Amino acid sequence: MKKLLIIGAGAHSEVVCEVARSCGYSEFIFVDDSKELLSIGRAQYDTTALSWLIKEYEDAFISVGNNQMRKSMYDQLIENGYNIPSLIHPTAYISSSATIGDGSLIGPMSIVNSNALIGKGCILSCAAVVDHNVVVSDFAHIDAGAVCESYSKVDMYGKILAGTVNKNQ
Image (cartoon, rainbow, N blue to C red):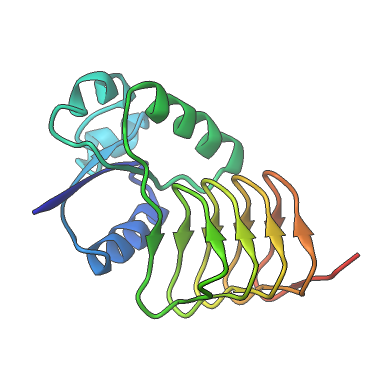
C-alpha cells in the first residue's frame, strides 16, 4: 500500500489526491495550518507534525496553489527528510526526452513535448501544453488549457493563465 502525505487541504488537494490515486497511492493524510480546514476535518494535522509524520509517510506532496508558499513547503519537507515525488496523470503525454522535476504535478491530458524542462514543484493543470524545448522554471504554474509555445520560458514562480499562450520571446 503506497501512502502519501499531502500538504494543503484546500480545493487543489482534491486534484492532487485523484492524480496520486492514478499513480498508485491508496492512503492519504492531509496537513494544513488553516484553522478552518482543521476544524471541519479536511486536515488531520498542522505543519508542526511534519517532523514526526515521516516515520509513517516517507512520500509527501504539496497541494498549495501559491507558488512561493509551495517553494517554502518544499524546502521544509526536504529539511525533514521527505521524498517528494512527481505525480503524472496516466493520460498525460510526456516525451522521453523531457525532464520533470521532483514535486511537480502533471494533470490529465497535459502534454510535455521533446526536450522540455519542467522544474521542481510545478503545476501543469488539465490539458496544459508545454511544447518542445520549453523551460518551465521551478515552482511555476501552467493553468488549464494554457500553451507554452516552443522555445518559450516561464520564470520561477511564474503563472500562465488558463487558455492563454506563452510566446517565445
